Image 1 (cartoon, rainbow, N blue to C red):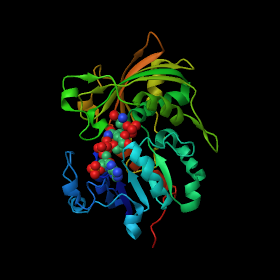
Image 2 (cartoon, protein in one colour):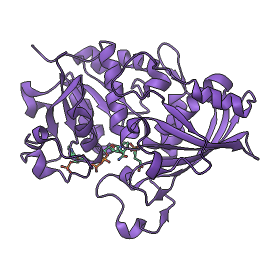
Image 3 (cartoon, rainbow, N blue to C red):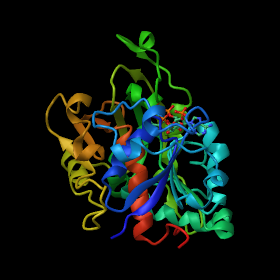
Image 4 (cartoon, rainbow, N blue to C red):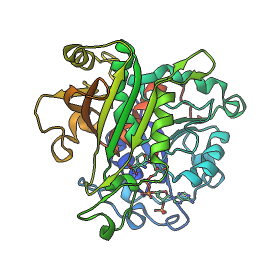
Length: 356
Ligand SMILES: NC(=O)C1=CN([C@@H]2O[C@H](COP(=O)(O)OP(=O)(O)OC[C@H]3O[C@@H](n4cnc5c(N)ncnc54)[C@H](OP(=O)(O)O)[C@@H]3O)[C@@H](O)[C@H]2O)C=CC1
Ligand SMILES: N[C@@H](CC(=O)OP(=O)(O)O)C(=O)O
């Protein structure tokens, strides 16, 4: 099968680099266009990018020239599939321009996640919400649209919550995060602030987690999403870990469940089984019995960085159950999530085609 041409907006950043890494050997997509800020435009990718991953920068991409950040500048070379990894304010300005130019914008940023007609999607959790894009006005006008994936802490959390919500219902939950420094992009948090330290504040993070969980676990009514009514309270903290967000969760269920029933809900959660998407992990939620796991150093790459690892399920004296989860913030929490969304869109015939 011929690979589809794709572009990356924000290609030089933390998430942009993950896109380059993941797409280099992707069976369906091939990077054909890269853009970043004016600081980078006109340079080769090798010159513009401070590559921080532990695999080599792909040679072919290293030699590509970073393009200006507008669809007009790309002209006929603009791919119709754009992975976007832009800061929120810039995404708010640029993503609609690319959608209006007929592109499927598959976005990581929070700019449009809560917009009513923009799907906020994790395929294992709420793939049916993708139908929202049919009502985007821009799609009717240009064939383009915006689809988003969630905040990196919300993604790991909803993967663990979905099997519980569908079997038992969720009344309320309390979550406290320990988030890796790569979550803040590059160069991110100054070393003097984070080494040997914990910073108990990440701007807007608690609000995003709370509202995004509601939309992700909400019900698609045929024209809109009815958010989950559960009460969600989040505490978000930055810790001196490179990759991997750890979350301590306490949960109250609507229908009481035994420990075995909760474990069985996680074990049997295989919503994409048999669908063979290249980026989908075999097991989206992995439960570990080890008393001191999950740990970022040991578990962050589970399922190629696309699985959530859950452990330490035990009774909670305030709510019903408590547990710990870990997920990779730049893979499952960002670039990997967007690539999986694109695979689902490709399979359903919803990706616009380049002009012949
Ligand atoms: N890091 C993470 O774990 C996660 C991040 N996200 C979200 O993804 C987005 C990107 O984050 P991250 O990669 O960490 O951020 P970085 O700061 O590491 O990268 C930002 C990217 O945006 C580019 N950029 C900046 N200004 C412009 C502009 N005016 N026009 C075009 N490109 C521009 C930068 O290019 P240049 O090099 O030229 O400055 C760079 O490529 C953010 O919205 C973030 O919240 C989502 C989930 C997880
Ligand atoms: N704010 C997250 C990264 C992220 O996902 O942000 P956003 O919701 O803007 O995509 C972190 O610092 O770890």
